[in-house]
Length: 175
Image (cartoon, rainbow, N blue to C red; front, top):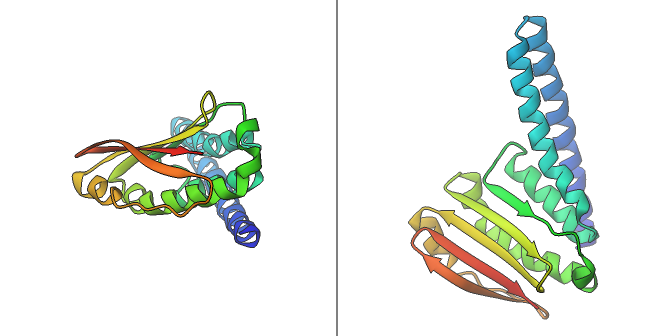
């Protein structure tokens, strides 16, 4: 798993470097053309994309941190179909970093197609008041219906469907 995450982080670094250079070139081009408003708009868009990745720095679990940064970059930094809400207390998860990352990899790979196609919006929330992680997915009936079939293989964690409607499914990951 460690080698896989290192490869993913190197891929992510390439994408980030490319995106950063591209954004700078676009902003510079707008400024050269005297279009300050467009340069400002693009600057804001670029900063928002990089802030999504910067928020992951608060995750003190190296495996999970690496995976989520790669996952966000694989969706596209400007893709707004996936959000992560992070609390500050990571003590309850530190012992299970590798297993927790494996679980989230399985679950998030399962929902990735809907996110990339923009047919779905998901929020991953770490609720550190309880040892639970919530993944809320909203989207088309076809995509959501397919998510009901998710099966997990974990020694420590259980993934349950807490609620389900035609356009929304809520997973809870519990120890």
